[in-house]
Image (tube, rainbow, N blue to C red; front, top):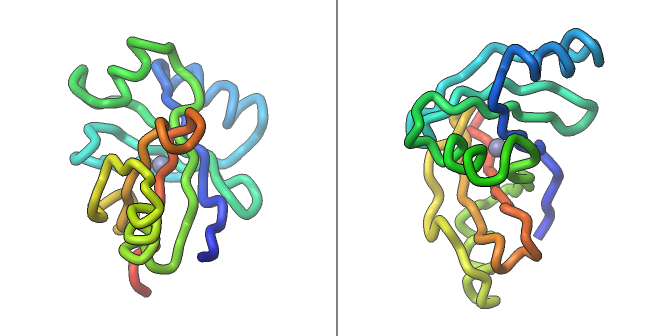
Length: 135
Ligand code: ZN
């Protein structure tokens, strides 16, 4: 199975302050924001070479990102590996006894299919698998 680092997700409590660092101080370009209703977040992709940073801003106190920030403060939330066939990847992980948060893929940002793997099986890192939208 081939997997490519797609992006690193960063939970952001104050978008203005995050932009002051990533955009103004570092000089990176920030993509147009996109709402992901299933996660109750607004995401801002920041291209960084072959991969990207993904600034995650909660849109509701019920958002998993809001809960993450409440518990641990802002910071690295997950990393995302891109695969060609997410269903096959999940089947392979399951066959290897890996604990999955999502047993089947669901819609993510940019029309992609995503699924999360439980940190209990990944040495403490929330890992997201992603299959790009067709075309
Ligand atoms: Zn992500």
